[in-house]
Image 1 (tube, rainbow, N blue to C red):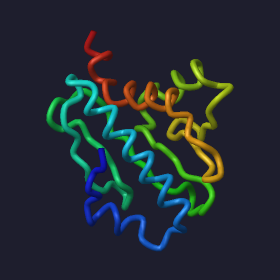
Image 2: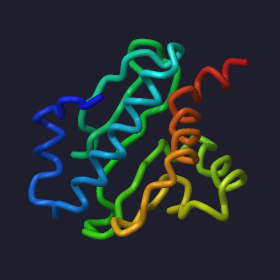
Image 3: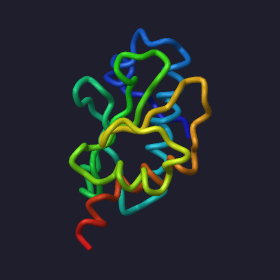
Length: 137
């Protein structure tokens, strides 16, 4: 399903090289697909946080915010950011240390020349978007 990209998201990525923008659009679509596939997540609110497209579980409160943007002004590296005060990156590291690249306790990093590890990433996104549901148990 092709999602209409809000103007604020397009503006945040304006001027990026086409290859980087295409990868960010793919990552955005994956986030929306994960949310759509899990009724516990509910519809996402897409907004900007720190000038970066962010996805919030405002309707259900099921998870923590995830953001997608280039990494440190790089045109070759982009990232999926999660809240740094969660244990999500530690969990991702435990599960996927051999297949993902990490930036501290806040991001998963990807290179524009590489294919996204879709199955692994779907699991990581689902963990973020349901983070508060697990904390409540």
